[in-house]
Length: 240
Image 1 (cartoon, one colour):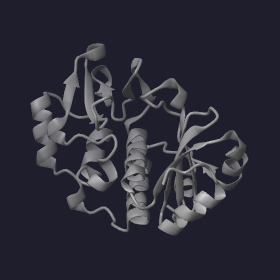
Image 2: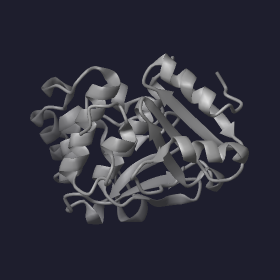
Image 3: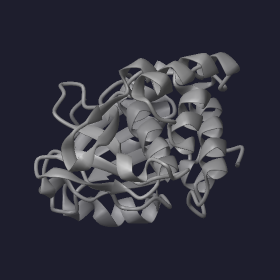
Image 4: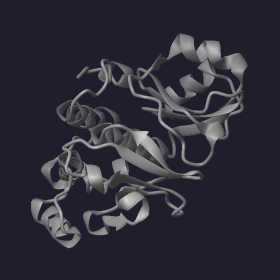
């Protein structure tokens, strides 16, 4: 992992394995929060075992590993669409059974692993959208990366802003920011806000929801100065 606070460099080459996902999450916590992950930031084995006993089956390895790594780091996992605690894991009856691990903060959407694929170490994830349950990302390890990026994005009150980005500013976005090596994924709220794509530069992180003119751009700076520089790069109608 790079020393600079550049998420695009840290994710160069994508997230091909669970180990790669865990390494990125450790790097991000240290580089972007100044609080490295510690053993107490993860859910202990007995808490996860109790959740498995209540459910009646073992958690997929990638889901269990994420909880064990950072399941108690609320700043990284619980803001806009929070991770449920292990005791809150439950099965939705849709599509033959779905293990729900994350919910939108007003209960408008959820993220889940299909039960018929839960015996895989790194199963796919679905999201509950306005159209019903749809594919989100094809591996749970990727879903952990997206969860931490999104939740930490919205956690940063003094270093977060958003705007409806006009197409006239797209050349600046593409010239100054590198698209992250993450797959496109849907935004649950509406088709117009899909696909979701991520961009970064040192100290700056961007999420673009949709590809139409004036799609929403969510931005975070590593510091207030980074956010100011980002606004100057992309002089759109920023909310804050």
